[in-house]
Image (cartoon, rainbow, N blue to C red):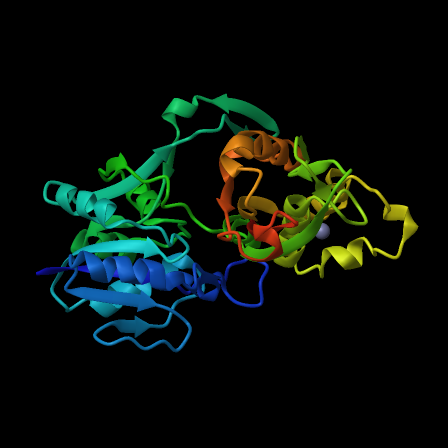
Length: 363
Ligand code: ZN
């Protein structure tokens, strides 16, 4: 007698507006159902794994059968298929819960030693109301159980209950309750949530992009030096159409690159008088607006300031604080490193300062 993991992957996904059934959408670079399949395989708890699916899928040593019209029809098909296969317990799991853990499987298995039905549940984190006819009443949320899957049963008992059932059920636990059978409820796993709508997927899926920025300006006398939006006491300032702030210019290019929005020159043409003598911190505003309008947030920014002087250690905290304010991000997302060039070239002679930056953003 052995245990079987039944993966229900044949749902029609009425709540899921996508050309593909939700079981086949890609989640973390894999079809949704493959996540639970891998967990079941890795757990080594099952002699048999059965996938109920309406798609032609092929895996070594795994049975695949066609699903029914509704979820309970699919379960019925699975139970009929397993009828003479010497199965002790079945673990029935929805493919729409891709974050099933081996730990939860082990806990369920342990409880099956002394129980014929074990079901994981969570307490409600929301206040719950209940509608009876036209009246809405409060429910005590501490007494609300939100059931998850896998729901685990003694095969023969479940088979018999299914055989005599004529009604539509949304999970096996409801069939047990309807027949006044005892269920052992155990605490489920918050991560084992169900993906029900396309919104769930877009909410869960974050796309990350990277952009690199580089800038160099000549140092000239009689100009103030600005780095990262901070005025720095120095013998020279950076020559340029604007205040020549190499750090902010490189950040702007890095962020534009990550957003795939061309470059700083396109956004601020240097032949336009409109931007003459502009403070670079004002050049950041259209870039942060672009980030916001396109739902991007910054993961981190790493900066290499390439110069002999000023010494980065002396200006680091001021510059990071300034960039953090300008971009409205936490200081710990910004890193500033100093790089000297062993007195080589015009940077080594303190006639220019260069800066390179990498920015990571997510949607
Ligand atoms: Zn520049």
